[in-house]
Length: 279
Image 1 (cartoon, rainbow, N blue to C red):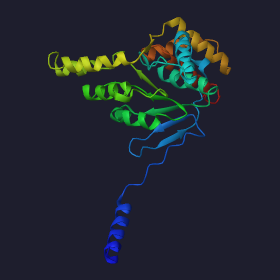
Image 2 (cartoon, rainbow, N blue to C red; image 1 turned 180 degrees about the vertical axis):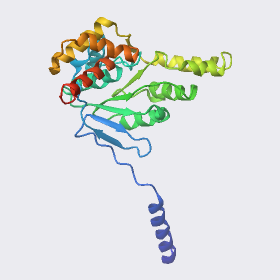
Image 3 (spheres, rainbow, N blue to C red; image 1 turned 30 degrees about the vertical axis):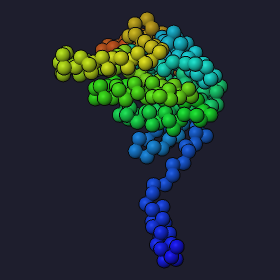
Image 4 (tube, rainbow, N blue to C red; image 1 turned 90 degrees about the vertical axis):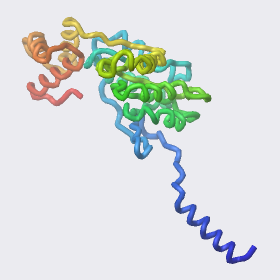
């Protein structure tokens, strides 16, 4: 072959190499337990350990036991179902997701948690393929999941959880929290009309069937609320004579009782008494 032609082909090959996107490096999950997945860059950003102790979640003992047991099985390489934590706001779903994970991960070094935005449901299948076959065990968390965009987002999640022809990765467990058991906002159905959205509604509601473990969080009654308040006060040395009355007034001003409201009252009381924030 003519040398000038070889030189030309070499220059073309070099130019194509420069234009080609750089090869993606395999992500590293060393040095941290918690990560956040960035949709644009595809990077896994390490986060510090979650600081809330599991025993500070009061009034959800049944939920804690079921969730932690499921995570222990998964961390040990046993079969486990995807998990949906659902219930009214402020009852501890997100806190249990992270505190429960931390309690198990401290005994299982290979267990990692990756948080994703609900806006990236369409990219979950790609993420799962990145994680497939790795030695770690991954809990992929989507906090406050709902289908504001309707059936397309629901189809994307179903596709990821079913795993296509290869099946879902056995080292990935999907965990979601939601205020709705069936994940679909009520106003979405009302706005589009019952007949027009019949198939969409079936698509969206059926996603919850892909979660083999549902853990519900009911509203907190007064007795449980006060139990939480007194437990926090004892734990952090917050001594006041009229603790229960003040805690109930705090809840009345917010129109609800919940673990979140009990914790907010505790932080406010700690500040009033000249103490640093509990967490």
